[in-house]
Image (cartoon, rainbow, N blue to C red; front, side, top):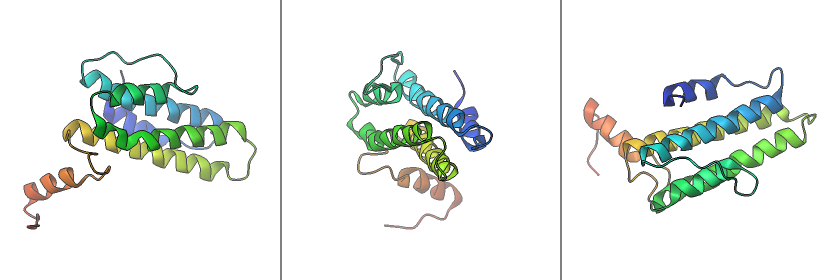
Length: 147
Protein backbone atom coordinates (compact mmCIF):
# COMPACT_ATOMS: atom_id res chain seq x y z
CA UNK A 1 0.00 0.00 0.00
CA UNK A 2 1.27 3.45 -0.92
CA UNK A 3 2.05 5.70 2.07
CA UNK A 4 -0.12 8.75 2.70
CA UNK A 5 2.86 11.01 2.01
CA UNK A 6 3.43 9.29 -1.34
CA UNK A 7 -0.26 9.67 -2.20
CA UNK A 8 -0.17 13.37 -1.38
CA UNK A 9 2.94 13.84 -3.52
CA UNK A 10 1.43 11.86 -6.40
CA UNK A 11 -1.78 13.93 -6.34
CA UNK A 12 0.24 17.15 -6.51
CA UNK A 13 2.37 15.89 -9.41
CA UNK A 14 -0.57 15.06 -11.73
CA UNK A 15 -0.81 17.17 -14.87
CA UNK A 16 -3.01 17.22 -17.98
CA UNK A 17 -0.03 16.53 -20.21
CA UNK A 18 0.28 14.35 -22.18
CA UNK A 19 -3.03 12.54 -21.51
CA UNK A 20 -5.75 14.08 -19.35
CA UNK A 21 -7.81 10.86 -19.32
CA UNK A 22 -4.87 8.86 -17.97
CA UNK A 23 -4.26 11.57 -15.36
CA UNK A 24 -7.94 11.44 -14.33
CA UNK A 25 -7.70 7.65 -13.96
CA UNK A 26 -4.62 8.08 -11.77
CA UNK A 27 -6.40 10.65 -9.56
CA UNK A 28 -9.33 8.26 -9.18
CA UNK A 29 -6.95 5.47 -8.10
CA UNK A 30 -5.16 7.81 -5.66
CA UNK A 31 -8.51 8.83 -4.16
CA UNK A 32 -9.33 5.15 -3.68
CA UNK A 33 -5.93 4.60 -2.04
CA UNK A 34 -6.65 7.37 0.48
CA UNK A 35 -9.91 5.74 1.57
CA UNK A 36 -8.19 2.35 1.68
CA UNK A 37 -5.90 3.79 4.39
CA UNK A 38 -8.97 4.76 6.44
CA UNK A 39 -10.48 1.29 6.08
CA UNK A 40 -7.24 -0.53 6.92
CA UNK A 41 -6.74 1.74 9.97
CA UNK A 42 -10.14 0.52 11.17
CA UNK A 43 -8.93 -3.09 10.89
CA UNK A 44 -10.96 -3.96 7.80
CA UNK A 45 -10.09 -5.20 4.32
CA UNK A 46 -10.93 -2.68 1.55
CA UNK A 47 -13.67 -3.89 -0.76
CA UNK A 48 -13.17 -4.60 -4.45
CA UNK A 49 -16.87 -4.03 -5.10
CA UNK A 50 -18.26 -1.11 -7.07
CA UNK A 51 -21.14 1.19 -6.31
CA UNK A 52 -22.77 3.03 -9.19
CA UNK A 53 -19.90 1.72 -11.31
CA UNK A 54 -17.09 3.06 -9.12
CA UNK A 55 -14.95 1.41 -6.47
CA UNK A 56 -14.38 4.83 -4.83
CA UNK A 57 -18.08 5.05 -3.95
CA UNK A 58 -18.10 1.49 -2.58
CA UNK A 59 -15.01 2.26 -0.49
CA UNK A 60 -16.68 5.39 0.88
CA UNK A 61 -19.77 3.40 1.82
CA UNK A 62 -17.59 0.81 3.58
CA UNK A 63 -15.64 3.53 5.40
CA UNK A 64 -18.79 5.25 6.62
CA UNK A 65 -20.26 2.15 8.30
CA UNK A 66 -20.28 2.76 12.03
CA UNK A 67 -18.89 6.30 11.67
CA UNK A 68 -21.53 8.79 10.51
CA UNK A 69 -19.02 11.65 10.57
CA UNK A 70 -17.23 9.98 7.64
CA UNK A 71 -20.23 10.91 5.49
CA UNK A 72 -18.80 14.44 5.43
CA UNK A 73 -16.67 13.34 2.46
CA UNK A 74 -19.45 11.58 0.54
CA UNK A 75 -20.04 14.52 -1.80
CA UNK A 76 -16.30 14.93 -2.26
CA UNK A 77 -16.10 11.34 -3.51
CA UNK A 78 -19.04 11.95 -5.82
CA UNK A 79 -17.35 15.08 -7.20
CA UNK A 80 -14.17 13.10 -7.93
CA UNK A 81 -16.32 10.66 -9.92
CA UNK A 82 -18.18 13.50 -11.66
CA UNK A 83 -14.97 15.15 -12.84
CA UNK A 84 -13.53 11.80 -13.85
CA UNK A 85 -16.58 11.29 -16.08
CA UNK A 86 -16.32 14.80 -17.54
CA UNK A 87 -12.67 14.29 -18.43
CA UNK A 88 -12.89 10.76 -19.82
CA UNK A 89 -16.17 11.19 -21.69
CA UNK A 90 -15.28 14.55 -23.24
CA UNK A 91 -11.54 14.21 -23.73
CA UNK A 92 -11.45 16.74 -26.58
CA UNK A 93 -13.21 19.51 -24.62
CA UNK A 94 -11.39 22.84 -24.50
CA UNK A 95 -11.85 22.96 -20.71
CA UNK A 96 -10.05 19.66 -20.10
CA UNK A 97 -7.12 21.26 -18.25
CA UNK A 98 -9.46 23.20 -15.96
CA UNK A 99 -11.48 20.08 -15.28
CA UNK A 100 -8.38 18.09 -14.39
CA UNK A 101 -7.19 20.91 -12.12
CA UNK A 102 -10.56 20.81 -10.36
CA UNK A 103 -10.41 17.01 -10.00
CA UNK A 104 -6.90 17.36 -8.60
CA UNK A 105 -8.10 19.95 -6.07
CA UNK A 106 -11.03 17.74 -5.01
CA UNK A 107 -8.78 14.68 -4.68
CA UNK A 108 -6.45 16.77 -2.54
CA UNK A 109 -9.40 17.87 -0.39
CA UNK A 110 -10.37 14.21 0.08
CA UNK A 111 -6.79 13.41 1.07
CA UNK A 112 -6.71 16.26 3.61
CA UNK A 113 -10.04 15.25 5.12
CA UNK A 114 -9.15 11.59 5.53
CA UNK A 115 -5.59 12.15 6.72
CA UNK A 116 -6.97 14.71 9.19
CA UNK A 117 -9.70 12.33 10.30
CA UNK A 118 -7.06 9.70 11.01
CA UNK A 119 -5.49 12.20 13.43
CA UNK A 120 -8.73 13.58 14.92
CA UNK A 121 -11.61 11.07 14.94
CA UNK A 122 -14.26 13.76 15.48
CA UNK A 123 -13.29 15.61 12.30
CA UNK A 124 -16.32 15.85 10.06
CA UNK A 125 -19.01 15.74 12.74
CA UNK A 126 -20.29 19.15 11.70
CA UNK A 127 -18.35 19.74 8.50
CA UNK A 128 -14.97 18.84 7.07
CA UNK A 129 -13.33 21.75 8.87
CA UNK A 130 -9.87 21.06 10.19
CA UNK A 131 -10.44 23.27 13.24
CA UNK A 132 -9.34 20.56 15.75
CA UNK A 133 -6.08 20.10 13.86
CA UNK A 134 -5.49 23.86 13.52
CA UNK A 135 -6.26 24.37 17.21
CA UNK A 136 -3.80 21.72 18.37
CA UNK A 137 -1.19 23.18 16.02
CA UNK A 138 -1.88 26.67 17.41
CA UNK A 139 -1.56 25.35 20.96
CA UNK A 140 1.85 23.93 20.13
CA UNK A 141 3.04 27.24 18.70
CA UNK A 142 1.40 29.31 21.43
CA UNK A 143 -0.84 31.26 19.00
CA UNK A 144 -4.18 29.82 20.14
CA UNK A 145 -6.84 32.29 21.24
CA UNK A 146 -9.54 31.69 23.78
CA UNK A 147 -13.04 31.09 22.27
